[in-house]
Image: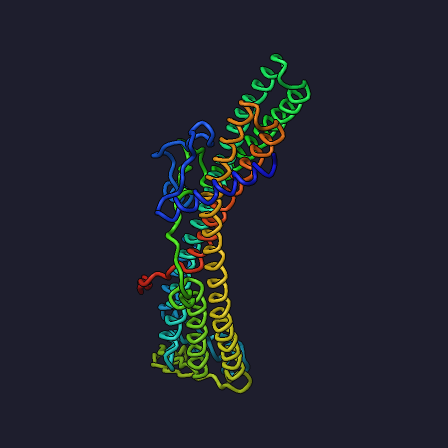
Length: 437
């Protein structure tokens, strides 16, 4: 009997594969023998979930605050040094004619720092590079949120699809139990068949209970991520969207234009700007101080003009340039390593997504149709007394496992696709620079 059942499974599988090659996934012969139809859409879509998460994510707020801080730092970098008011009293509390304040000379003036070497422009260059990096980080955060929400959404949809399949399996187990009871009452089967059917029904109900909890947890995790309760049904049909099968060599992975490489480029730009600033800081600044001096002894007033230049005796700026150069070398090495890592990750994610799509097409197409057809034949044979109960239960178990495998394969594809889209997310092309105020 098992050989006959296996032969029917092969025949059904071959027929299903022929149908699949004609362009559409094969359908079950009897709708009642397939899992309940996924909830229709519209409802709470993936795009709505991503938008809701972006409006409540703490990471978005942190990135926005970092951008504001960089903009404010750019304003500070563009400011010129403040002048200093100076006061000085000479020739007081001495001896002879300098006793008391009779010969005092009081000087009041202003010391004005004059930056040389392009320090202000170099500071602005560093600040602009930091603004670009902060704005890029905002794009990275948004891409991370989309990937995370997509994976949580797929997990919730897959959990609901598994629950639907388990509920349908529990319904079928209850029907088999009733049929077994009828056969036992009619004397066509032993009570052992009813006991086995009852065990299958209990296990199916327990599976529904477990998957109900998992579906609730997945939905709660998604709601926690988006920051609000989920209103409406999820797009459970999202799992069934697969790309067409492709053949031939894979497209080489390219890191250029991705967010990851753009971040490394931004860090390198900051390091380059740091070198320019360190070189500018080597040039000493001037301090000029026009002032007025009052001579107490003659009650006269005179103008004073002072100029000072620091002597770079101990700190001549070479160490700062060396440190900035080393930081630039580090940033360049990180960029080269990032290029290799991103391209390797894209290649792996692309292969994983393609393999998952292949598995999903097979599991959700020919394999599922073949298992469904086998169950249909086994039920008919069981009702007519041609097949035993063990054959029917084995076919039902195979169908349940195939359904779960199809859902897992579909979820794996969409999860891999989400990671691939995150890796290949393009960097923004426009950067808003700060302005002097």
